[in-house]
View 1 (cartoon, rainbow, N blue to C red):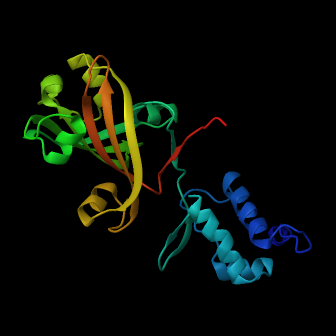
View 2 (cartoon, helix red, strand yellow):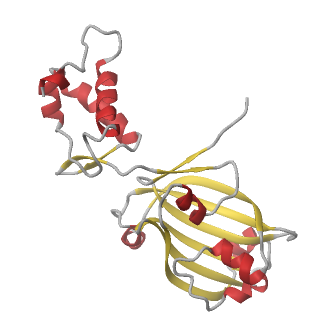
Length: 248
């Protein structure tokens, strides 16, 4: 492994932590370290490159923040699975996002029932409190792996034909267009960080208390003056990221 030691130039003006970070990133990108591989410990990297452990830790911390590495307490640091990137510049659905990235989209169907809208749901859907809505809960998957826990509320009078359908591995938006004649055209969406409860963690196959992205979206249909759908989703922070392109 002497060739690896040569990757760090101590005479360079480039900070040592950044050199190590870029070296490890290259090792991941070229396949020397593959998904789920255990990388050398901080102590081993410190000895190999003859740099202090704080420098090593800074490099690893940044790779963890970028989603290339993940730590497992008491075990070590592993190469992460790549995050799924979803652009925020247009309305898209989960199924299309997965297909566009060469992954098999899926949905584990948990429940569907008609319930009276609570105050918060009614407010977002712009309907009277207590009006009937369809509540559907699913786990969204990519290549069989849980990506998000999704709870959708649909205005019952517009989406009634889907009641009773098995939505296992089906696109909700595609089904709404096919069965209800509802073409969804625009949405308002917010994103914030939250932490999963033990029951939510079970469905997402993460640890209780892990940070996730809370996505709330209100979706409008073509020729519909008020919202058709309000959806609240918990996306795994270790498997998903969102991007936006802005003009200056």
